[in-house]
Length: 367
Image (cartoon, rainbow, N blue to C red):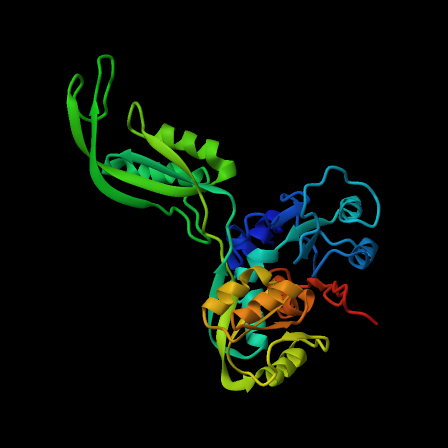
């Protein structure tokens, strides 16, 4: 029989579909609670870790709970019992349930929450917009003879550098000339001692997670051929995914008729609609969850309306001033199409996965 997969291996497979490194940098995606070396015997999936979710899990604890929303989002100083995120973390730990979070890594993934929302509303010609700031990272740059570049790249890749999404061993190289004067007592790998040298070199650069900086620099220095390697470390942004989608309706509609489509597709009768009901709608932007920060981008890209959640009064007014209508369908309802996809992914990776998506986390659901 094949060896049972560990939690780490299962989450590695999930990460190939929704790369963890594409999430918003402040988002605690990945394993939040538990031991990655434990066997993944049973898996459950939820939208958010509520009291009702934990109540159900305690009766028959799975090995792993995969939640869309993070449970512990802010720094936590105490894990104490009670009806709080920390209290629910305590109960999961006591029951032996590991917890992993997908959130914005799943939002931005191909086929993830943003794409699912666009598909639910029948959009065509869909493309991404609204880049996220990715995880805290660095760019490491060094200079060396071209015939040593592969050895150095291999060393730093093994130390955790050179990964972008599902690609590994990523680097950029450019040719140039380096100059140096090798003083007395030096032992230059190229050039001559006690002379001003000009040597053909390659500049090689690669990205790395900030938390792997020490390991990556040490690997670079160990593999580098020079007695005194030159290298630079830069703080960097970028490499996050696109959290929104923009596309077109196959047939133009009025804002009022399109709002009816949104209501039916998301099973959400309580929409908030800002804009002229008779306005013609052809280009639609969507952002699952909270999309206020991306309204200006949607307007700049020519969207007629944006469908999202958590839009404030003032943000809606500013959006209308830009010529962009807004349909606020609620935070959880705009995420719901993606959650069905998330469960399908987990059921494929872990047959028999339990769905807890019926335990709706929407605090505005009402009676």
